[in-house]
Image (cartoon, rainbow, N blue to C red; front, side):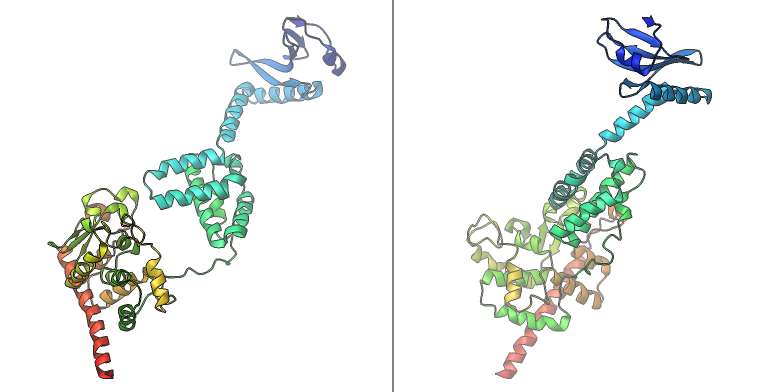
Length: 415
């Protein structure tokens, strides 16, 4: 229903509801619309391509008469330039809704869900912690496209105060992956976390490599192990770790069912290996460890000490659980090797010696269970090189036995 009231700021304010919708014309299609309940809004009717369209300019009194006329002029200019203001407003509204809906929490959750099925428990726990503890509190409710580098930097600085600079940079790396995901999904145009790659200003401490022994240091270490006053099982664990140079967790959690004395082979199941989850689950991903004659002898010595446990090294408190993962580290410290050798460092020692002795790199890398970085090569190269690796493992045990014999000869000379 149209009315002929001349619109002024005063008259607009005085218009009261009548129980039916009302229209109060201003000029060139601009009018005040009053609903039956009294809600007032500014509208503009126009035609584009012969079709009628209506643009809502805003509600009164949020938009005054003067501002409504200004918006009306802007809309007419848009039409004169070939635009369609009502349609453009709808597009802007949808884009704004998309931006506001793509909060950091929502995007990071989608990124995490897209990865978790193919990642290890350590990966899931680590990134879940960084998201929940460090990134979500300051960023979670913000639209991901509106997060600035300085906002993320403030979150990283807070994390550095609490957990240290190295952890804070790991948090940044989690953010890098979230923003990369958002960029692939066209939710952002740039990755602000990558802009902060040098945010530590050179304060990042140098990465420490795990301590390991050189070949000429092995006799002294083996002598220290032999005279270790602790549990015999712990001593045997150290020897087996050195002879097999598997990862510490692979040995500590090992079960007797994984060993075949008949075939002189240890098959470490893929779920206990350090490899991407998508690499697990087929026969090629059982890590095969050929057993030297010395290792077989050590295992036969160990077997009666296990009291029937499924584990090679059951816990002192329960046969249903393996020994603690820190047991060997503690032993090395007590032996005086805490700063010169870690259980993981045994792998570096074995690798160095075997490479120096001329063994093929592929065989050594297979025995170390290092995942082939080239995905194409990994997909097609299923050669286990078992005969070559069996020779390699026997040579390594013979080499260690030679170190022990040197110790024995030295003791004889002293006697």
